[in-house]
Length: 287
Image (tube, rainbow, N blue to C red):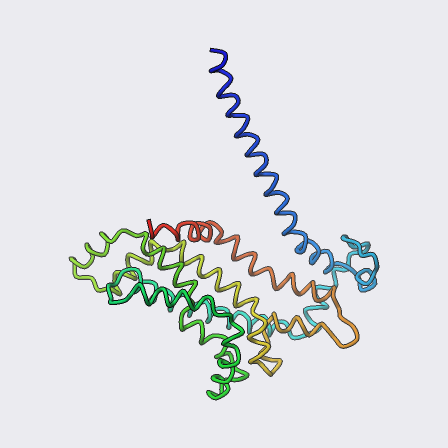
């Protein structure tokens, strides 16, 4: 009896040690990822002399709260913020619409060579973006779309392979009995998509929306290549204006960076549950 009594205790101790080790690794990983964010915040509160100090201090010796209003008004960041909202909203809407339509076709409709076409779509994810950068620039230049938001928004309305893959896996996890029942009642395919598939796929849609929001809000290369006028600059492009030829105002740059990061943090925490659920459930379709 004593041997049998010790076995559960030993198993419990092993589980407790594994749980403690997991928590310890998570804490260490969190600290590593939070350090750059902490450095950005503390730098945004430093004076210019404190920023240039060597060796650098993690925390400021004197809090310079005026970096936030001074940095925001040093350049037309109010206009940059509005431009970023417009570009991000249109691109995110385009990603959702195009990806939903393509993913629904791959997941629920029957077509010849459908799986081969889907494999070809996934293969395009291996093509580096730098390969298509020059041809895409030439295309938009010939279409007279330079210095407009079309090159930043239009590609999102043509579908993104990763978003299509994510939503397809999520759609395939929904039982087909719903489709068959709706078809018997006379519903069209678009009606099934709008009334059945999309309401059941909110976590997946939230995941795609967050991915698209972050990617377009932080997009620097696109605006750098296609935008010429300062009044059309986005937040990501406007931040690099702090870097001058002779001096760079790192404290004001970091202050505006904190403000630019706030929408991303807010969106993620508001949709965190749907985002995690959408990513975790997207692989159930193949089961």
